[in-house]
Image (cartoon, rainbow, N blue to C red; front, side, top):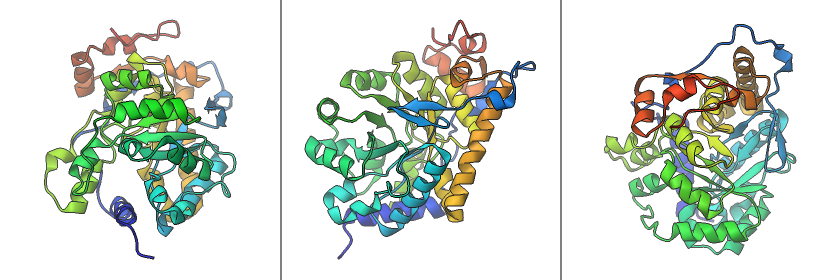
Length: 364
């Protein structure tokens, strides 16, 4: 059977992400301007540090999510199985790639199914926000049920769509469709960006729409503008660099809502996970590092996850944080361009630097 246009596009995306430079050229996440404050007398043992947490009723060994990568092809099926098996073994969560391909062509459903190798993980399905205008809630719910997902990512990808030659530029009505979805689907809905970040203004709209979590997916990591520019052989470099840096996006969203907050977009280590949590995130995710690790099989992905977990544990130990809640209240120094961006958006870097367990601070 011939491949659909969606299948072909997904395969091309996977190849580009695996073989080309797709990260931002100059813009950074902002984590390079964030320093955790060292605690020279932590008054705890390293083996007492607890990185575990819970999301949507599932226990996680660490606040780490393998972010949505792929689906809709036989190569994607293999990658999803490797990622899921490693997530199961490590005790972390995983998001699936956009399920649009399997909705359009049900024979592709098996490329997303991973419960045979990962029966216990927190598994998050995925659909684009513009697909909410195309498919009714029952059809999306059916896609979630078929892969046995515990929750659903709804991804926002206006930048990607505007760069894609065949992209969908019609976003009017998406917020109303999102409200309908959250009220009817029966599983937690988490809205995520795809590398351009979420502002506090949008976060307020999302909170009011009934979503149960936000994934900022900020600028500084993979640029989907870049992926589409490469795919279409365009040279509009300014689109490659578009977006809100991840560090700023985390703090903006945390300032206006208390929903579970996932930091992604350029997270490249357990140290970045620690910094994200100290800035206000509850969890952190990444895609590209784990996609690259699949070249070493399930073992490679598992080892990468365990390395991140150990880095997070050591950061917690060195800040005197026995639990993640302590890390989220620990003081951090924010300098450089990131501090400048914070101030321009009415956020006080000094509040983060001087906070304590009794005063989380940070926001004017």
